[in-house]
Image: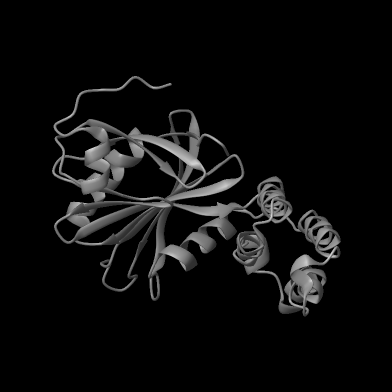
Length: 245
């Protein structure tokens, strides 16, 4: 367990209200499947939205978000959790969790591959009276078998996934990329810009923690304001699995 530190406003209140904090104030939060500790940049506020943590300073904003499972094992875990919900009688929650399953391997598969993956589930789950059908269990088995046939995504595919889900990167080119070690964890860091004007800079960093994708992105604001906050926030991030995941 990380030690707690004193703060200008109590930790729970700070996360709920997003009160501004002095430079280096340590915060903790659960970001979906991840537990994070970080030093809040000076004059920035933190708002806890669960799977997305927002950082704001005026009109400028950064987001730290859990983008879900990307490894085979993590996808299987999500499906097993959904199966557990179904077995406990929470059918609607179970079906919704399956419906929301997404990963780079699925997103960028061909339409025929995606159709083949989902067919055993759709044939049963969306049939009349299928909610209580004994065929739901084998349908879960079929999904898990299908997941195990999917290829592992490359770093470039993970970047494309983050860009498509979290960034307005239209018309931007990759200006620089690097791998950076933070607290012993490897992050892929990308910088994008308009190739003609060298403006409209966007920054993104991501890592895979226990098979789930965690991404830090610059959302809006001037790069002169965003770049130092992005750099200092990333440099301070400590990541571990959230309790219960």
